[in-house]
Length: 247
Image (cartoon, rainbow, N blue to C red; front, side, top):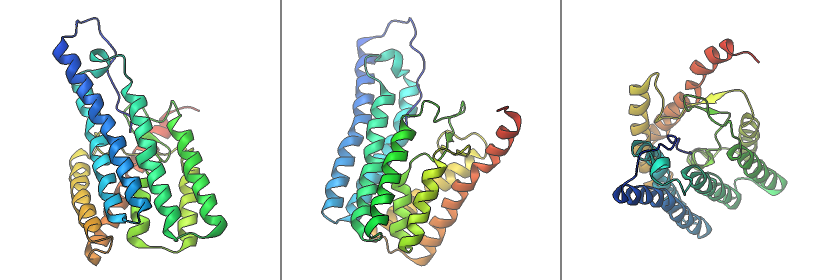
């Protein structure tokens, strides 16, 4: 998701720092390559490779913002917008590739398949165009269009088409709902357990992908429990914020 940046300052920027900032932008831009390779794998029916490329893109997206903030990239390389670059890549890796994977998987049929794609693509486009997608402390307002993660669970659990369709419809509606979802790398409250569970989830997810989405039962249950933790974590922030904020 888009990394926040410091405002430009009047301090002079050395050539070395400008090159460093450009390198960070290129690092962010590499996500489009991993997304393209994931799409190629999806078209070829190689779901394991698709998820591995998406995992690499997610890793880049997870750390590039921290690097950008550390070097104050907006001041060092003001010509390029890291936020715009990030949004372009996210729409490919979070939305287009997983949507195609679901569309071509056969888990949804007929009109439900096309309607689900419309929900995913249109609500995600609106979300990425939302200037108020984040709170002041970098939590996400509404469902943050992380369809790569949702499709991961669809392939892991293989629910019925009706269940998938309902989940897609509900998440599409939650895109515009007054709920918040955690940004795991920016969370302050419960930071240690959240980051610890994120590491565990990542290891288990890679293992599940390597096992062609048919891992041991305990891995499936662990991924579901951790996923539920991240899903409900926003409640503990939504309630006080809603109570203290006037409409």
